Length: 223
Length: 223
Image (tube, rainbow over all chains, first blue to last red; front, top):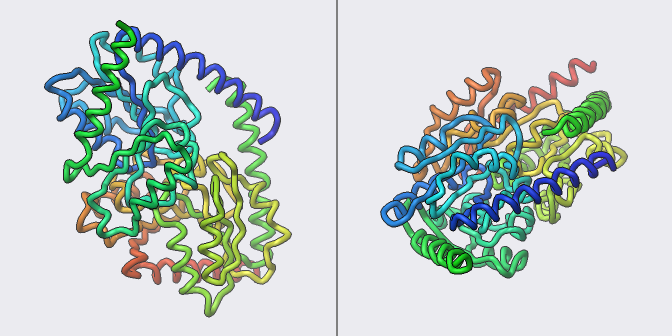
C-alpha cells in the first residue's frame, strides 16, 4: 500500500472505532447484547441464526441485521422464522462498517434482548471493523479445512468465540477437529469454542446458554 | 465510502490495470498461459492445483504463485508435487495485486507453459484486481451453497470459467447443481462450467483439456 492509501485506511478505521463505541454504549444502555458473526461465504451463519431463532423465540426477543453484497435472500430467511431482520446491501463492499449499523438505529426496538449482525461472507476484511458488538464470533465450517486459523488469523485473534459448523460432515472430510482447535487456540488462547451441527442440532444449546449468561452479565453490570 | 476513499481506490485500480496489461503482454510473448484462481477460503484451490500438477507434469511445465495472508503452507504443498511455487504473503491484505506478481517476474522461467496464480481465499475483493491473467477462474465448492453466484456476483461476472468443486459431497448436502449453474449463467452467460471432484478425480480432465487448447490458441496467435 502507498502512504496515501495507509493514511486513508487509518482515518477510516479511526472514525469507525468511534462510531462503534457509541453504538455499543447505546445498545448496552438498553440492555441489548449484540453479536457480530464473521465467516467465509457459506459457512452457515444464516442457518445458525435460523436455529437460534427457534431456540430463543419463546423466552427472548431477538433481531438480525443482515449484511450482503447483493440480494435480500438472507433477511427473507430470517423473517420467515418470525424474527425482525434488516438487510444492508453493500453493493460491492466487502465488509460492514459501524456507520451502516448506526443508520438502522431508529428502527431497532428498545425491548430487544439480542441483536445479531451477520457480516458479509468474507474471512478477511470484516475482522478489521468493530460494529459495536459485545461478542464477536467467527464461524469455521468443517469443509473449509482445519488449517484456516493460521492462514486467516485476524478473524480468530479479534473474536471471542469460535463456532465450528457442519460437524456432521466430519466423517466424510479430512478435517481434524483436535488440530483445528489447537491451531485456533494458538492464535487466540481466549477463544471459547463450540462444535455444532445445525442439521443434527448438536452444540447449539451450549452456544445459546453462553449468550444467555452473557446477557445476564450485561444487565447485572447495568443494574 | 467518502470521496477521498473513492479517489484513492480509483487511482489504485487504474495503476493496477496498467501493470496487469504489461504482465499479460510479457507472459504472452513468452507463450505462457496465465490462470488466476479465485474462491472463498477452503473451496479447494490448492487441491485442484495438486491434481493439475499430476495431470500436466509429464507433458507440460507449470509453476504456481501462491497468495496467502499468512503461512507458506500452500506453496509447500505444491512444491511437494515437484512444481516450482512462490509464496506471496500479504500480511493482512485481502487480495493480490498486479505489482506483487510483477515483483516475481525475474524468477519466472521463460520456458513455462502454464502459470497459475492462487489468489487469497476471498470471494469478494480479488475480483476487482486484474493480475495479468489470460483466464480467470472462480471456484465454488458445493458446501458453500448453490446461492452464491447472485450473492457474490463480481467474482462470477469477471470470470471466464466456473469450477464447481467437491461434487462428491452433493449427496449429503442441500446443493442443487442445476440451480447453481442456472444462477451462475444468469449472472454471466459466457461462463464455461466444470463440475469436479478432486477426491473422485471427476471433471479434472475436461478442465485440463480446456487449458491445453487455450495454450495452443495463445501460441497460434503468437506464431
